Structures are given as structure tokens and as C-alpha cells.
Amino acid sequence: MQIVWADTEIEADLHTFQDLGVEVQRPQFYAQSMPAAIKVGLQISLEDIYFTKQYSIPIVLDADFLLQKVYYKKSDLIPWFSLTNLLVLDTHEAELILGYKITSHQSMQIAAHELLSLGNQNIFLLGEHSTEVWCHDYWTNGVTSFWLTQNRLPHTSESRSILSAAITASLALGYSLEDAIIIAKMYTHQTMRRTQTGFDFRGFPEDEIDLPYLASTPLYEVPKPFKRCHRLGLYPVVDSFSWVELLLNVGVKTIQLRIKERTETLEKEIQRSIALAKKHSATLYINDYWELALKFEADGVHLGQADLDAADVDAIRKRGLLLGVSTHCYYEVAKAHAINPSYIAIGPIYPTTSKVMPFLAQGIERLKRWQRTLNYPLVAIGGINIERVSEVVTTGVQGVALISAITKAQDPRKATEQLLKCIKM
Image (tube, rainbow, N blue to C red; front, side):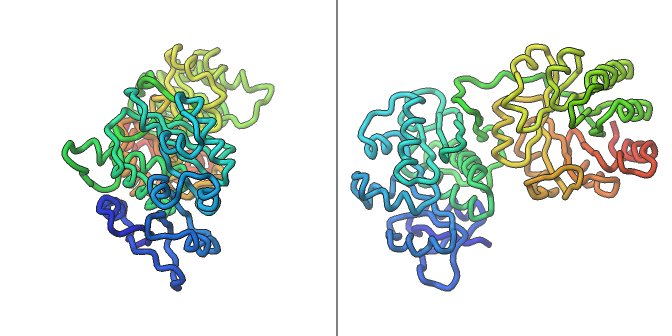
């Protein structure tokens, strides 16, 4: 079990750390073993933080605690800022530090970047003092940024402490900072949503209602949904018309055409594939080339994370196409959630050689968690073969995507027929 250092007198924090599966200890500086993450509290001094920097331990600093220890003068705060990985604060606290009012989302962004200039590595600025129906929080590291939108629930100083503790626990569990923030927002929303008289601690968050929408700008309404897809079943991903033709002749009803390079024959390959899929009453998703999918009236489009920002998602929705989105982590799932797609692809489930991946395999247990958490139809992808397919199917996912299990098989037709039997349409 991973260990975090934090104040041990805060009951809500203790429940949070226990719920998320980490052990909390009082800070023991100069001890032989170091924790996996630290939440700065009243028991930790600036000198202690200096000492821990040699170990590259993620450190979360909550301004609610900091402003109890240090006066609001910037000169007193800067040493703390420069030694921690993440500063969590709300707009009222940012106003006290910066000396001016924050009255809009634009001024929140300006304030966050000014706080970065004081030595902070990452800023998570909470819009808690707003009276809007939606809660809008802003994260930035100066290079990238995002807004999180959730329906507003009452906030207290205790819920703030829970949020910072949940971020710390998630970092200790090995999640990236972006993922840790999403998990922490889900967990905090869960504890506040489930009770009216006190906090209700129920373990790791596994309910889509607690998942924030992640986007480059704040949202002010629930994203308009794409039409939901039918059960996808066996979902091969191939790179040519000839493969599409083979699969359709075997009886596959859902296919993704993913052509990596834009060649002179690209349009013809896509047009022919779409036309043939329609003849077979099959659903063909076009990967990436959404404009050609619209031009030749495909049934669906599939977009990776890198393609989401460039694609005209509204145009795809208005034309009535299905949309699938690739995801690999909580950050990407929250980003897909803000688009409200037809299905979400989860991967890689197993180690894969079909594509260079910066993500570790998620495994079956994580896939089961996603199935419990999300209401979207899910497609499992990554390293799935004939030996593993049954294990994947038992999780209840709506589709199983494969590449090399078919395209690199000695007999692709026979391999496809076997997979179709395993994944009953």
C-alpha cells in the first residue's frame, strides 16, 4: 500500500485516503523511507519541504492551509510556491494573494497565469465563490490548460480538504496529475452528492454523474449527445478497401477504416469502402478523415484524442453520424464526456504492438471499472486476441476492437470466423 504524508487530525482527509486505498502517516522527515506523495498541512514547515525536494515526491499545497500559516504577502508565499507541484486555491484566495477582483472566466485564466509567474508549477483554480448553476474550475501549467465543468453542489472548507487529499492520494497511486485532478473531482462530488447532513465516503468513484466535463472553455449546458450506436460486437480496425471487403464477406457488421497516410488513392478507398458497407447493411467508421466521411455519407467517424480539437464535431453531429472517441486515461475520458459521443473506446487493455503507445496496459480489472462507471457504450481495444477475447467479452463491453489478431493471422478469414463465434453479434 502506498503511503502519503499529511495532517492526521483531519477526519475527512483520513476517510479520503482510506477510501482511495492509501495509508496516511504523520510527516517523518529525515526518516529512511519517503512517501509516495505529500499533502502540505499545518504540521509541515517550509524547511521540511526543502528537504523532500531531493526525492522528487509530488507535493500538493492547498491555499486554505497555507494562508493559515503565512501572511498574504507575495514575498512570504513565493518560497512555498516554488517548492510544491500543485497549488489548489479558489478565486477568493487568489484575490487575496494577487490584490484584485476575479469576476469572470477570463480573469480566472489571467489570475492562474499570474500565480504561475510567482513560482508555481501547476495551478488548480476553483470557481467556488460563483453563484452560477455550473461549477467551473481551471487548471494550467503554463503550457497546457483545461476547464472542468460540473453541476454545482455546496462547498465547504472540509470539501476543499477532501479534494486536495484525493489529488494527493491519486498521485500516490501513480496517476498523472491530470488524471489525479479528475479522480479527485469525482470523489469530492460523490461525497457531497450522496449526503445532506454530512460527508458520505463510499470508496473509489465509479459513477458517471460525478465525472466532470473537460474542455478548452467552460461549458454552460449538458453537451448535445451524438446518437447512440447499436451493439458493435466484433469491431476490426483495418487500413484498406480490400480488408473491408474481406470482412464484410465473412459477415462482420462493424468495421473501422484507419488509413494512416494520405495517399492519392485515399478518397477512392474511403468512398468504395463506405458504398460496400452500405450494401452489406454494415456500419463503417472512418478514422480521422471526418470531412471525407461527411462527403461520402459514412455512418460513423472515429477520432483519436489528437484529432478532437481539429475536427468540426458540431458538423459531424448535425449530419447525424455516429462518433467514437479513443481514450486511455481519466483525463481523456473526461474530454470525451464533454463531446457526448456515440461510444468510447478504452485501451490499451493488454500490451500491444499495433501502435506506439505512451500508456501502460489498463488490464481487465480497470476495464471492469470503466464498465461500472460509464453509461456510454464501451469498446475495448489493444492487445486482444483469440485467447483473450472471452475474458474481454465477459466484462459486458459493447464492442471488441482488434487489429493484428486478424490482419497478421495466417488465415485472416478463418481467424475472423472464430472471433465472430466468440463475440456473438
